[in-house]
Amino acid sequence: MKKLIASAGLVALGASLSQAASPFSGDGDKPWNTSLTVRGFYDDNYYLASVSTNRQESFGVEVRPSVGLRLTGLQTSFGANYTYSMRYYDDRKKNTADHSHEFNTWLMHTFSERYSIDVADTFVIAQEPTLLDPTGAIVTRSNGNNLRNDGTAKFHAQLTRLLEVVLGYRNVLVDYENKGGNAASPSYTGLLDRMEHTANIDLRWQFRPETVGIFGYQYGFNDYTGKEAIGFFGLTPLMSESRNSRSHYVYAGIEHSFLRNLTGSARAGAQFIDYYNTPTGDSTVSPYADLNLRYTYGVGSYVEVGFQHQRNATDAFSASTTSITTDQESSSFYGAINHAFTPKLIANLNGRYQMSTYNGGSLNNQTDDILMVGVSLEYHINRHLAAEVGYNYDMVASNQSGRDYDRNRVFLGMTASY
Image (spheres, rainbow, N blue to C red):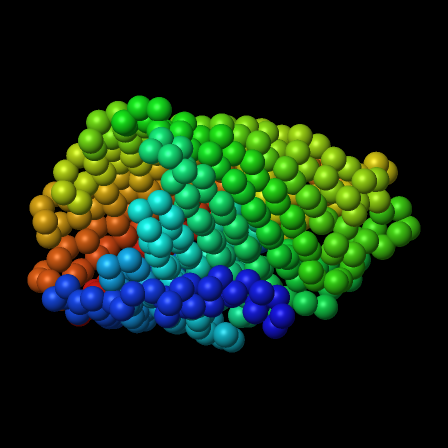
């Protein structure tokens, strides 16, 4: 509970700033919204079983209510949204339904023309790997109320007309319900429960009206909190905290508006990592990159592509005579197309391909390839009612036996909103 309170402190900060800000002013629109989505679906591998084992498939029904709030004042904007999802699987004999909760909140406050702050937080309780950890740290389903909290805070200071300084902090809390593991059979709690702290400072130089140059430094600390045995190094049992690390990032980048409707950004640098708790005191250097390009070609229509290279946690563990598995190094390509055929008929195509390489242990240099593709079509019958149909394909190809799988899902549903 103390971990949760620490991570949720960013939300409390946002609330306190909200109370201290100027009163919110109405703009004639209602400040809240609500919706209810009901879908029928088919899932041909809902337990994400390996291709070498028996798959389990099922038809089912998903019910997804959502409620949101948005307030706008002279100096302060605040928003919050809560979504609950219940997926009932007709084929399951036990635990027939999955329940997930997602809460998002954000606040932006302007102190003056030169100083501002923005705070955001996302809290998720789920079982699906893509909801629990979008970095690919886990590729299998995990039963129970597993949670992830991701909070950020940024302070902007416009020192001169051309020079801005941004101070940032990010806190990520991961807590799995799967506990009670041992060195021979570690649990997700032992392998993945952690608190990630990241602090950064960016210098942003507006050297042209359409171009901003960036130079930054970031410090990261990953604290594994499971307090369980996760494996052996020789005959010595290792605990969760053996994967702790400290990181220093240096990077440079640019943000550029090629056209009014075509923007791009790029950041590249190096990450220096110290795994100070491993039996051999390992350290390493790896590249860091984050590229993004977005083109808006019509009302409700855009194309976005990007690339990221970074290190991420992993639920896999191994040891050799010289090292243990500390994490993965991943390269991700992603893209999305949102096309409005008419104001009422909208299509979406999105995908992500990630190549991840294990660092250390007997798994060193082995790989996981992850592919996720989704396509959907939405028709707005009127301002309060919409119909949708979609398809999702997920695939994991791994050097590890029993880890690879594929999954097909189709859905058809309606959304009522007000």
